[in-house]
Length: 222
Image 1 (cartoon, one colour):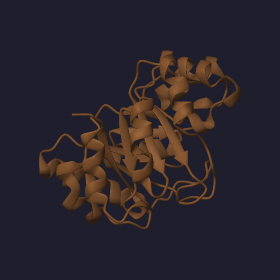
Image 2 (cartoon, rainbow, N blue to C red; image 1 turned 120 degrees about the horizontal axis):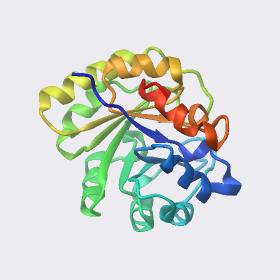
Image 3 (cartoon, rainbow, N blue to C red; image 1 turned 120 degrees about the vertical axis):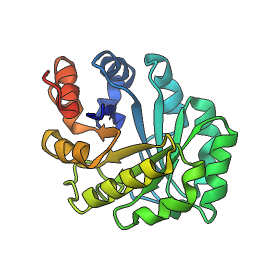
Image 4 (cartoon, rainbow, N blue to C red; image 1 turned 180 degrees about the vertical axis):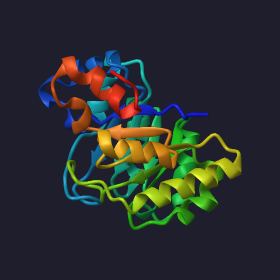
């Protein structure tokens, strides 16, 4: 059976001067999640947005807000993003000494817990954490900057994680972020991803193009 792929537009590629309107527009265009990339200038070089920005855009969409924390120490920021309206909080094992406890804390806050794997991290890192994980995010570029080319080496990791999740019988979502466009999306879908995160590929062309951009990433005819 063909897997239905969900699309999570990354607000990092949106027009920051119109962020609320952009959030509403991608929701109307068919987005399944709203993805926020949170960077602190420490774990990764750029500084992007904080909990107040999430709180500001939350009223513009009824979709789940998927928050990727590229921050360290991540434990210091869980509560503020949870209170601001995050539905899913995704963290990196490198961002905290105690990743097991970090995932537990996300669950205790009543949020879905995500585990992000950098390109240099193998699928085996997820194995002992499946009981606490609702989502596994495969970074198909090195985190920190948009517009990087997709790393083909991550396709085997995606496929391996797909098998691992299916064998576990757990309802864990498999998400991919980095270099996702019309061409790479085909390979990512074939490898078994559930959610594709994309920025430029969705926000290019203006609001009138968003629905068609999302449909192409899904592999549908616009």
